[in-house]
Amino acid sequence: MIQQELIPPEKGHIGTDESGKGDFFGPLVVAGFFLPAGQEPVLQELGVRDSKKLSDNRVLEIARSLRQGYVSSVVSIGPERYNALYRNLRNLNRLLAWGHARAIENILEKVNCAEALTDQFGDERFVREALMKKGKNIRLVQKTKAEEDLAVAAASILARAHFLYKLKDLSEEYGIELPKGASPLVEEAGVKLIRQYGPEVLEKVAKLHFKTAERILRVTGVKT
Image (cartoon, rainbow, N blue to C red):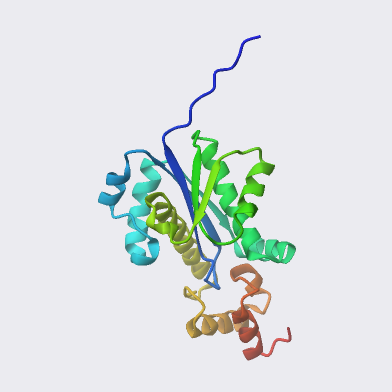
C-alpha cells in the first residue's frame, strides 16, 4: 500500500470579515482573504486597514489590487436569500457563521492553510460546526477588534467593495438611490420604493428584520 504524502500547510493565515450587517438595503457580504507569511509590508504599502476607516473610493481601489494579487473569497447573501435564511435560522449570528465558514471553505479549496481569524460576532462554535459539517479542520480564532490584523482588514475591504457594487446595482435597477446604513434617509428611500413598486419590493432590496422596515411600512399605511 502506497502511503500518501501529507502536504504541509502553507505559511500564513486566513482572515474573514463581513459588510452590510448594519445596512438596511443591500446584501450581507462575507469575505475571506489568505495572507501569505511575509506579505504584511506589501499590504501596508497598499494602505490596507479596517474598511470603516477608508473612503468608499479607496475601498474600491484597494480591493481591485487585493483581488488581482491574492487568494480570496466573497460570499454574497442577497436580500431575498438573506430574508429566507433569517426566517429559517432566526439568529443573525448563525447566519454570519454560515457565511464566514463558507468563505473559509472556499479558500481552503485553493490553499492548504492551518489557521483562520475572524472578528468576535458570536459563539465560535457556530463557525466551527459549520466547517466540520464540510469536513474542514482548521485552527479557528475569534477575537474583538480583529480588523487590526491585516488579513481581516483585507477581508473587510473586499466585503465592503462587493457590498458597494451590489447596492449600486440595486439602486440602478429600481431607479432610486439606496443609502447605506439605517438612517432617516434610508427610511425616505424605502417609502419611495413602496409607493412606486408596492410593499413586496422590500423583500428584494432590504433586510426585513430591521425595525426600519416596520417604520417604513407604518408611514406608507401598510399593515404588518
